[in-house]
Image 1 (cartoon, rainbow, N blue to C red):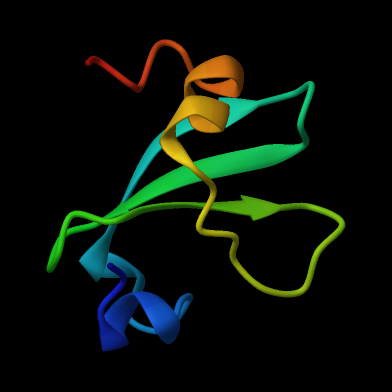
Image 2 (image 1 turned 60 degrees about the vertical axis):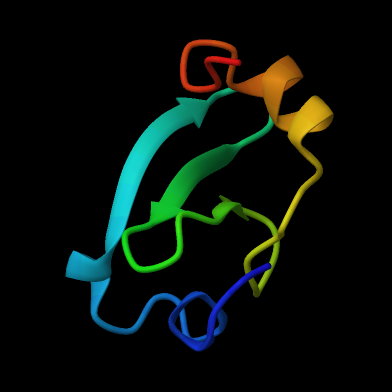
Length: 66
């Protein structure tokens, strides 16, 4: 579950790790260094998306190792 730091993205960007970029999805995958939550920032959207893990695997296979 996302923490309050995740909810405030992009504030204090040092608290987030960029994991991968998907040209197909026009998105960037991030991990919160505080709670470990994965979320994406899609170019056409105004807020981050807490996408289900199975969907993230499809678009960012190099970043999801499970």
